[in-house]
Image 1 (cartoon, helix red, strand yellow):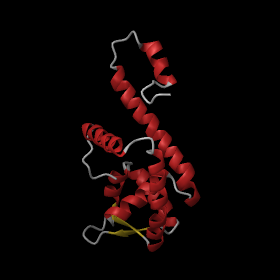
Image 2: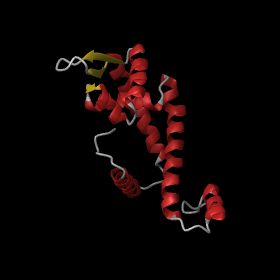
Image 3: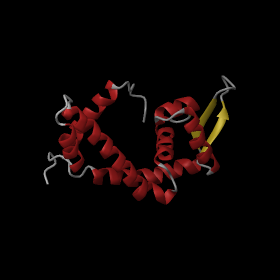
Length: 168
C-alpha cells in the first residue's frame, strides 16, 4: 500500500462529503496529523511509559523540567500544553511518587516553583533513551530528509495556531 493512498476513513469522508465545497487536502492533512499523533501517543504509553507507570502528560512534565530546569507552575503547565488545574494534578501525582518537588517562590510567595528530585532526574535520564529509540522506530519509514521536512512542516502548523516555540 502506498503512503499516498487514502486511508479507509478518508475514502469514506470523500464518499459522504465529496459533493460539498470543502478543502479536502487541508482536512486530510489535519485529520491525519491528529490520527498519527494519537496513535503515536498511545503506542508510547503502551510500549515505553507503562513500565514506569507514567502517562504521556507526566512524561512530558518530567522531560520539560529535565530540559528547562526548575519552573514556575504556570510556566510548566504552558510548556506541557495543559491547563493549570490539570498541571496541579500531574505535579501532585509526580510529587507523591518522589519525582518532583514544589517550593514557594522566594520572590513571590504566592507562586510555586517545580523541579525534579534526584529520583525524577534518574528516571527521565534512564527513560528518555528508550523513548527516543521508539521515536526512531516510529519514523523509520521516513528518510532523514523526510524527517527534517516533516518536522519543518509541523513547526509551520504549530506557529500558525499560536505556538510561541517555548513549549516542549
